[in-house]
Image (cartoon, rainbow, N blue to C red; front, side, top):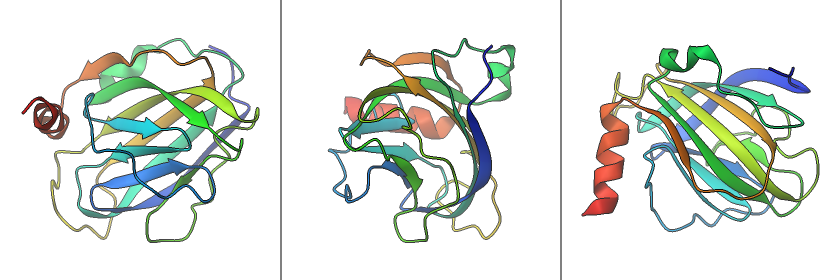
Length: 170
């Protein structure tokens, strides 16, 4: 696997079960359609779903120049989904809805356009719907430039994701 050009970890504050991947000024949430149970988006903004209602989660960001093969550690995660995102400005970042911007790298350093985000999640069932003061969930975001494609599901294994997928079907 190619080495990331940028990698960093930090805590992100979740509010209302979500944190965002957003271009500056893009705060209007897309229609709530969590078809894959983990991430949904519109140009300029993506919503990543967390199990906790509010509190910090651990987030690691890795940025790549090209496609990232699925590593052998996918089974260490409860959910793994590839999802297409689009940056309108080339300055898309991980953002918290009601908190300071976390110190994580720009997700779209190659300019505006389409990107692929592989989102890994672990621990979303541990404190479902709770307010937490210490992280109980972890997310890994791997991002690279790529034309828009349908979602690719690598792993669906938590109850929270299943409940989100079922909410779209009803």
